[in-house]
Length: 318
Image (cartoon, rainbow, N blue to C red; front, side):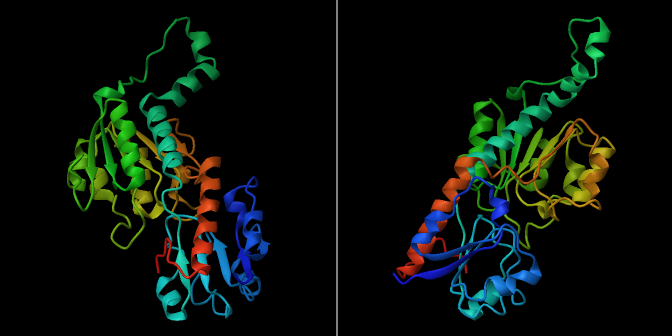
């Protein structure tokens, strides 16, 4: 194989403990922690391969990349890449599939357990000395319920959603699923019915024109006042303002959010209103990023590059 130039544009989104040296077998590797729009043109000018996570890659940012042959997205979602432009320009695009399933499912379960059991509230009750001052050996408010008594609604039954369904069943939950093509292994129902019947609702959909704001004010209005909602998919699959209003008004009981329509979270986000609520969990888009998942992701990227250089198609999305 001929040696090529590779540019890693936003290495800091992958963690400081990730090693990019394995890509050196393909050629010269330039690793950049962050790249803003003004820098992209110069950093990809001589690159045949780009490795990127959150960078917007479109006709404007790719205009000067005359040598570019392949874009490797270090994620399953590729909504940051203009596929139409890439097809026109003859640029191949690869994503990575299945690498983060265990990591995302694990964080989803952790959020569900924390919110259903009101762990943050009980933790605060001890830490602010309310328990010490109460003189009572036990404190059992707010009420919590056994997982086996609950219904868990899975919105999106792909690899991650199916793994979460497995975990939910291991807790004894009844599982409902929303999937465009019904799965015979699960009770698949319309989204409105899932929202109406579920005690826990976790979202595992890619962001497309069909899924944008799919959890809107009408769907939220169907939910139980005791429902817990978890979004570990993409921020824009849910109407963030509608979720905030429902949470602030007590129309849902808990919220776990790992993804945002604008990242990092901005001071203008509607979620800022909920920062002090003990039944809300915010995490910084980290559910995918267990160490093992990130190492797996880099291994998959290397395999994508090697396959491309050998003239084979692997994880191609364009």
